[in-house]
Length: 164
Image (cartoon, rainbow, N blue to C red; front, side, top):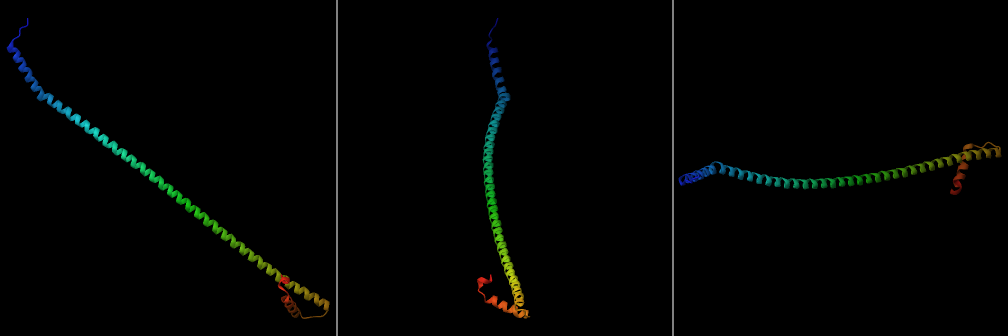
């Protein structure tokens, strides 16, 4: 059966502990060191990822601010363009009114001039008719220029309301 030999047991334990020390130095220590390095690398990666996420959030908020500022600037430019367009429209309308008033005044003056010319022409014809009628009535040859002068003087001496 099985006999326990104390010498064999001692050598077995000594061999077991020696093997344990050898394994600890050759396999377990590098394995633990590798696990520690891996754990440290994972911690660093997590920290770096957090840092990058924070930077990305900051960059996102910065871009949102820039978009808001650009939108505000666009609104300002649009408002300014509308103001300029309104001013230009007002200026154009005012210039058109001034031009229309000028044209109306010019037309009024032209009408007045033509009326005055027509009155002068009518007067000259009336004078000629009056001279002609007077000559026939008097049945004598009177100098036309003298008669015209007499009639013109008579018309000039008439009140202004009768002349027009």
